[in-house]
Length: 97
Image 1 (cartoon, rainbow, N blue to C red):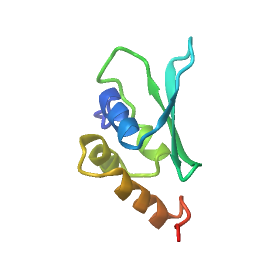
Image 2 (image 1 turned 135 degrees about the vertical axis):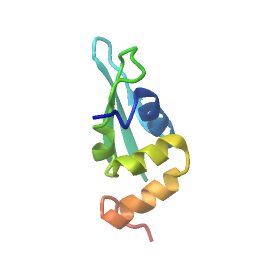
Image 3 (image 1 turned 180 degrees about the horizontal axis):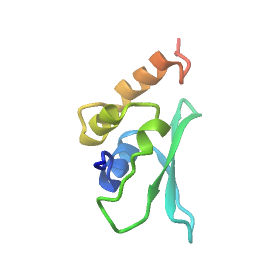
Image 4 (image 1 turned 90 degrees about the horizontal axis):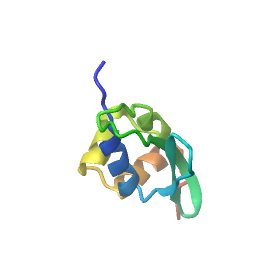
C-alpha cells in the first residue's frame, strides 16, 4: 500500500493547523498539539527519521479527517478555518456563539 501522508506533508499539516510542537530529546517523534480557543482538539506525532517518504498515515485519524482531506490540508487547498468548521460539523469541537 502506498504512503498517503509523508513526513513533509505531516509537517505542512502541523504548520497549517498552527500546532504546538513538543520535542523532547531521545524521542523518535515530535509531538504536535492542535488547539482551538484554548482547548486541545487533536494531537499527532511526526517521526524524526531522515527518510522523507516515511509513512505518517496515522495523522488523518488523529486529526479527525479522511486521508484525502489530510492531503488537502498539507497541499494547501483546505484552510485551518475549513478544518475547524469540519471539526464543528463532526462534533469534535463545540460551536461558538
